[in-house]
Length: 266
Image (cartoon, rainbow, N blue to C red):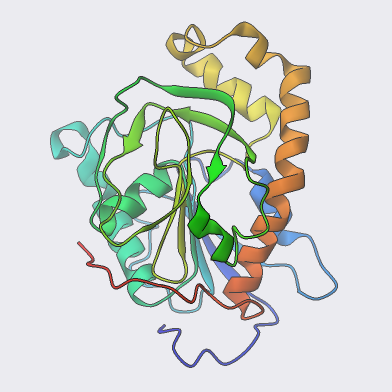
């Protein structure tokens, strides 16, 4: 499904959504399926990110979305289970090579980076957790998705690994002091976000309940439910329009970046 000569706007877009827990509804699902005057709601085909249900091609889909969760593969080492990620990386490579709009979050962003020549490693400064801000880079002002974001948007962090280095031809779009590579784009249409924008308060707290070792490393006030509700409201205000712009990118209502770089796929 090569995007060159894309035949105009798609009226009933179909997105492939891959996530470790396919039965878990996220706010991303809500934002993509709500009807808008200028765009029909997306049809989401949600599947496990690993296993036999993972397709090998993207024919019939207008976009690929890959989400993360509270678990991460510890290293790029088959002995640690990373071999299970090989089909996912191959599909991400296919998405980039066919110019299929892609939004990869957390684990998805890490695998997008590896699939296009970057690497992941244990974060040098330890886990990045809780509500945080990230800072747009100058290059983000020219990006069709990031251009309208505020300079320092709210996000939620929950990861023990970092992307370092980025793929050699990736465009860095957002950074932060603890982990530098927070958001990036490869090609014109594939985006990786190391942070979370898609959770609910209950989902986020459940991750810490499953990882008490990480809960001990964050200020208790940061996990106050009322505080997290406020953070989620701020995230929705900023990132819901971002996700809708991604849907427009996928359906032909928005042009991709005009400054893509040639990239090696691995």
